[in-house]
Length: 245
Image 1 (spheres, rainbow, N blue to C red):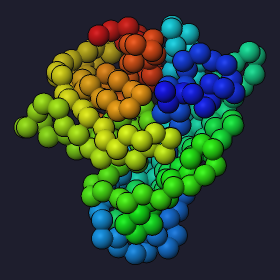
Image 2 (image 1 turned 135 degrees about the vertical axis):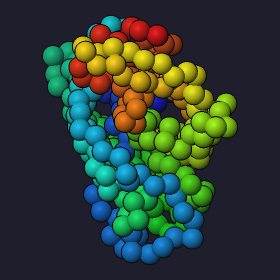
Image 3 (image 1 turned 180 degrees about the horizontal axis):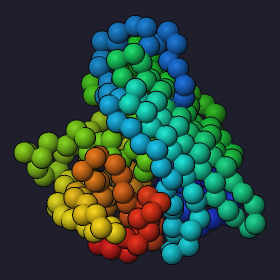
Image 4 (image 1 turned 180 degrees about the vertical axis):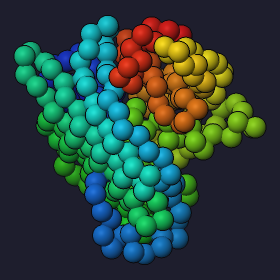
């Protein structure tokens, strides 16, 4: 499960299936790695912007607040705060890209460990929860797994004309999974105040995660639900849609 390492520290049952996903991401600059043009062209993470707070509910209880800033150049940063037994647990994540907007480095800082991915030419160096590193060969178009906050990024590469289940190659430092699958289930509308929002619903799966997500017409993540975990990750201001299906 994605939550097993953080869970050992904070004793929040089942919460870190998402918390680890919520916080996986990528650091500031790629240095020399950004100066060279790798033979393997990894996925672009530029061209999208967002600035919002997200709320994570487990079995109806608010357990995490996550603040995220995503810039059009592919820079991503988030900070999360969770409460457990009266204590505040803080997490930070970051993502950086090279001059072409392709992802470069991922970093996740949790209370008891740090994981990440750093691109170097045709390889990536993975930092594992135990502190060890492992080098893997990059696949063309591969994405780093940036958790719930980045699920909308993957949907940008979904071919609606083709439809059905589609997959993307991914890198997850703490798992052996090498792909993420998605399928668009429907397009629909919801009303928020006086506004009508057009939404798309996707089913997204990878090792340790099976989520239903809502994306608005601006490509922003609105909600992600993991029914089997009793977990809801939702944009602040849209809480009235927590239980809607």
